[in-house]
Length: 376
Ligand code: ADP
Ligand code: MG
Figure 1: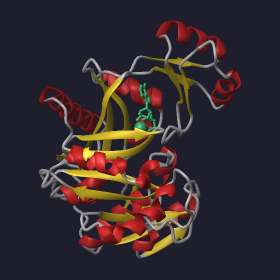
Figure 2 (figure 1 turned 180 degrees about the vertical axis):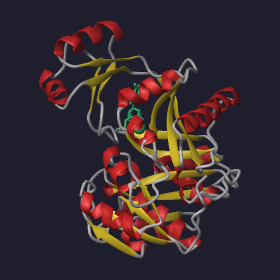
Figure 3 (figure 1 turned 60 degrees about the vertical axis):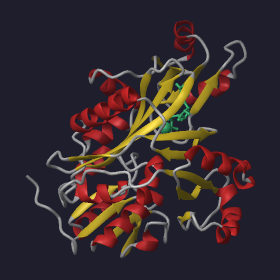
């Protein structure tokens, strides 16, 4: 059994975006030292940490230099190379291991894993060329979504096919040039929800209450907790969360995304082996945040039973929203405002978020969507 890593020790985080920043804030609060590895100097996580190594994520020499300075190493995103992690493991503890990472960074392995655990995935077919694409369309029937197998996020690397008679084959060919793709039946969605689960290396877990999510242009827009779903659906979701955490040998925090169809079927969409955007509201709404739970997990501290202290709504601030939201902040006593401190403001880039604690979730969501800030 791994020993606990106590405050005063040094945690290395690969990746210095907002997830790394919020991990680092939790770690600093508890008294750990934090070193970030990220190619961008003064990245969001480095702004709240003790030190930064400026290097690319695949720079093995720099990763080893980081590992040598740390008591434990973690990562904030799933696109770290599993072989690189195996290499740096020679120099320090990497309790998250590589199983969850290597399964979840490949959509085919991920779907196979979910099915081996007897849970449902969206009907799908793997294709290697246009001929197989046509066969997939015959089998699944449009509308379908074509997805790259690795590297996608926020809807990147996806093509929606609504009318197969009217598609741009060059676009599909372009995706296929990167390797095999997945063709997925487009589900008629009633709701999208997610569950965050954290664990330590003794297998103790913290399961967070189910969160409901609204996407715009495939990017998360709003999350709220609790989710308005049946107790049958939420029980199934907790069961999935516990079982997948156990069989992925989870250490730290992960999040599972689900689709609930208009005929009330629950499908597992995908798994993120790290804290997740939908879980940001746990910072204010729960007795422990997904980030503190991540740090507790990788440091092998006891895992708390999660309680929702107050219902909450979270709204993302993208590049087009940030400046207007800041102008409005002085008039909103109830806004828990998070600006990640990214140097460059870009359209559709996640720049910050706001969490509002409220019992009136539906009214708050409507009020947010009436506000012109989010109307772009
Ligand atoms: P990403 O890795 O970009 O998050 P997802 O597979 O989660 O990829 O897709 C992003 C969003 O696109 C989902 O949250 C959902 O809103 C929509 N979407 C993706 N696949 C489907 C599907 N099969 N049916 C309906 N909506 C989908
Ligand atoms: Mg997703």
